[in-house]
Length: 322
Image 1 (cartoon, rainbow, N blue to C red):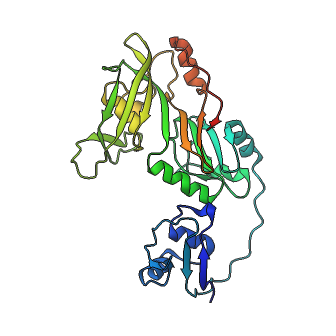
Image 2 (image 1 turned 180 degrees about the horizontal axis):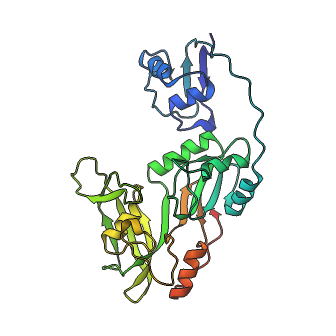
Image 3 (image 1 turned 30 degrees about the horizontal axis):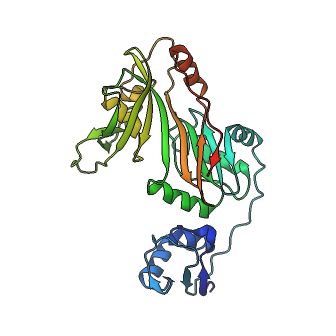
């Protein structure tokens, strides 16, 4: 038996769920055992019964009962050799780094996470940064480029994830769309509903606000430039973070994003068929204090489209923490 006693929550463990904190300190614990110990009051935080999903704060005291010893572990395999190719690719993406975070400029076509048929993805590449392995705190679609932040420790990841959940992060996207929205600026407040699309189809559709399983989604937008009535450059400010929100909202106002055939965009002769959606800027509370703002340059295919259409984009501002 092991583990009996009190443990304090460390500063870098702020906002971690209790069950994840327990598995971090006691890897042999299963989720079922954790839930049973919480339900019966054997695990307590500051003397109180809590759910396994409760989030912890620095300095809190977690009471741990005597725990069964974990089964003997299998012999450890030798660590894999560092992936120098992945490390080089990651270094080319780095926009900013410090002891808490690394901010990357994700290229289009690179999935953020793995899935069926996906062999190479950003989450898997992060191991090339070494130990401790940086952790994702938010996502970008495979074909969306731009600013993506990862945390250097579990505690920082929890705090940043909380910032994204509570809308404390300001996100700015650029898109080239077909048509010219009318009005040229405004707010799209439209519920969305996920469904089974079939191969290559749309995964999200507009929905009535009272439709079961729909979620509210809000996007502010403004037109920064346009090429006649055929194409426009939009700045998109999502106020919520729903799957495919920007893509569906643009299509819903009659301005699908160039390259987004899943949501009704037809190809334009002479322009890249890739998705023209770029996470231009991220402004977030820095875990060590202040606000960090980072901007990403356009990916090559969008830069080429801007040149072809005569759109002039200012270079990204240097990363700034205030």
